Length: 409
Ligand code: DGY
Image 1 (spheres, helix red, strand yellow):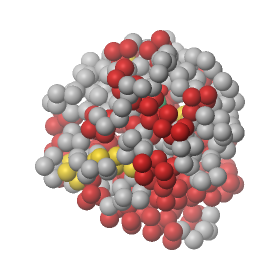
Image 2 (cartoon, rainbow, N blue to C red; image 1 turned 90 degrees about the vertical axis):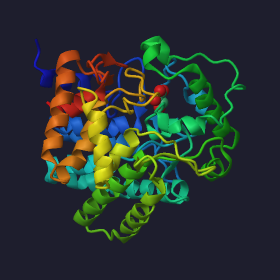
Image 3 (spheres, rainbow, N blue to C red; image 1 turned 135 degrees about the vertical axis):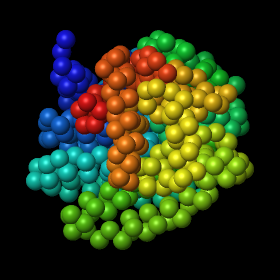
């Protein structure tokens, strides 16, 4: 059998479309924002120039407002829904109308550290774009303090239980007929339910109805929730961007200001009843009341604490293959349904970055071992059943291959 490292490299090459990488064939036939950043990290282990190209194609899609969209539709592919005609953003290249977790600065720092000489000029080119994107988050999405999302897809953790209370307020009954494509590519029991999908589409239709005016969507849209996941990822990305800015000789005081502001907003997403960070419906102040993967991303921004540590160990000890994306002891837990239970290798890798920096090498080693065991057992799947490592979602997945090369393998 082929060495797993060679298999991982072949997956990246096979998903490469010349400058950008598909998350996987079939299910995701375009460039996705945060998938792309992890692809760059993976490429950096064997082709550093190609790694930087990935950031270039991602950031070439940046809107004038600074937003970097979550999907870039380079070549129309009818096997995906909702495509560019549904989003109808009027952008060129065609894109979706929402963003995705800003991990790019963190991944750019990791790639730059792997070869500083090769990376310097490439970094200098993308740095102002990353700053503009972070500024967009603050001006448009952090107006209530923590980072807010206007659509569950913006969180990248589409159907996680965090969004249930916000989704309840979205009317999905009038979206009209449409055909899902995702359930033609993978087992429907591993994907979101139809009631959720109708609401996802209703939120897209609202965006179209206001010409994707992001301030209006934040003010009047059907869904607005504080996302602990993006809040922590952005906080972490600010710290990485400051390091990169200093290397390039830029004044980083504006970024330092954002970081301080965001950190001071963390108490707003701490649910004392739950004893954890929690998503919050910004229309009425209510907490989701569930422990999810977003809360555990606190570690990547050095925002953990002993109370959260207890939850971490409790949910982790309840399974065998990495950190589950929902609480196995909660009613909403569903071991194979996307973000409602499965263990996601790339998310484990992100949380582990935090563990390492805190000096928690025991936790890093455990997470790496369990993630590697799942991959070695059942391949480079999108996500895994955390109990028995059953491969779930798409196969030959880019970010799973990337984290094998950089961390798990
Ligand atoms: C999908 O199509 O399920 C994607 O997650 C949306 O970004």
